[in-house]
Amino acid sequence: MEAGTFSPIHISWLETLLRIAASILLPLMIGIDRFLRRKPIDFRPFVIVSLSACALSLGTLELAARATDPQIDLSPSRIFAGVITGIGFLGAGAMFRQDNYVKGAGSASSIWASGVIGILSGIGLLWLAAILAAGVLLLLMLSAPFTSKYDPE
Image (cartoon, rainbow, N blue to C red; front, side, top):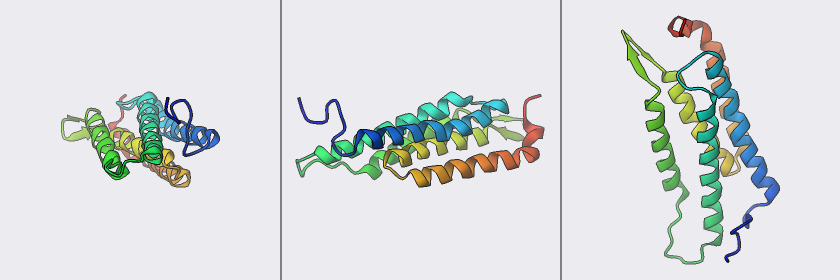
C-alpha cells in the first residue's frame, strides 16, 4: 500500500481535522439562517457541499504532495473550477420564478458560497473562510427586513 492511504502525509491530522471542522461549522451558521427563515434550502446542503469541497481540496493537496511523475497535472485551480461550476447547478435548482419575483436567489448564492468556504477550508485559508462566512451571514441577517415580503407566510 502507498503512504497516505490511511493517513495524511502532507498535513497533520490536527490540521486536517481543524480544516474539516471549519468546513462544517462555518456554512452551518449560514444554513441555519436559511432554515429558520424557511427558505428553499434547509441547513444540510450547506454543510454537505462545504464538507465535500473541503475533502476534495484536501485530497487534491495530498495527491499533489505524493505525485512523483512530472507528467501528472494536478492543477488545483482546474479542480476548483469544476467544483464551483457543479455547485452552481445545485444552487440554480433552488431558484424559481413566482409572478414578478425570482425566489431562492439568496439561498442559491449562499449554497455557492458554502462551496467556496469548503475549498478555502480545505486549502488551509481558514481566516478567509471565516470572513466569507461572517460576511454572508451578516448580509443575510441585515437584509431580512428588506426581503421579508418575499418570505413564505
